[in-house]
Length: 143
Image (cartoon, rainbow, N blue to C red; front, side):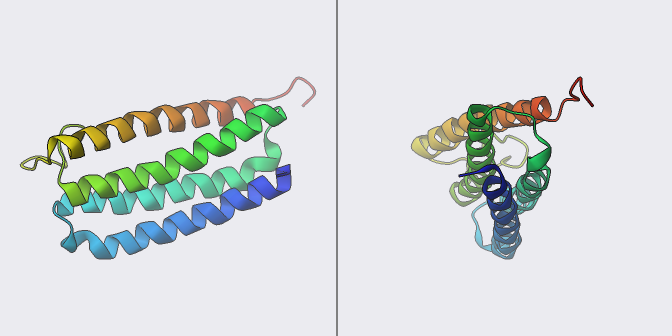
């Protein structure tokens, strides 16, 4: 996938994730933990915005092909996993990794473990993506 295609794909995927986030907002009353459902709604909208902005800024990045590929994958995974994991936490009513929104709830041990492992992995991915994006947007000496 070339540079223009990656930027366009991130923009499309970002807007699609925003739509998923908006639709998730309609499910808030139906999940086991509505407060976490609201969090999933916000994660979808905000992470979708992150992907869309990254897609729009893609042609301004000064990264190697390998770093661009890593950034694309990490950002895509991190954004979608953040929404999906938070939605799972709302459905399962877990609270180990989300003690504020999950207060008064508790899932099965396997559900808590799944949500926790997913949150750790997505946190690493999204932080790495942000660092790569910031590195790619650094001012070059010739600017």
